[in-house]
Image (cartoon, rainbow, N blue to C red; front, side, top):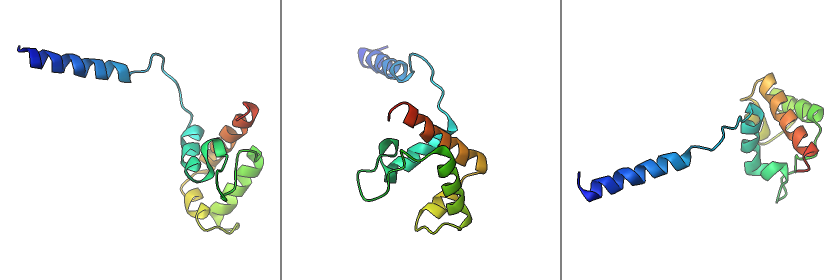
Length: 106
């Protein structure tokens, strides 16, 4: 092997090993869904704009609101389309996730 090839192999090995987390972490489905909410409603649901913040909505109210958007009973421009992609269980999971953020002070 020549030096360039060895260097390339070493670099690739370092890149791969640095991408592996030191300890595995479980991410809930609610957290994954919540990251899509952050796009409009801000990180941790704290909006930096005129779009409403959702960080202080109780899990029960958020569940009812999202189900209302999904069914069309609650008027929306965008939220009905977003909510229509989630099951009842996923709506509850994201609602609980945001509720737990409140307890953590986020």
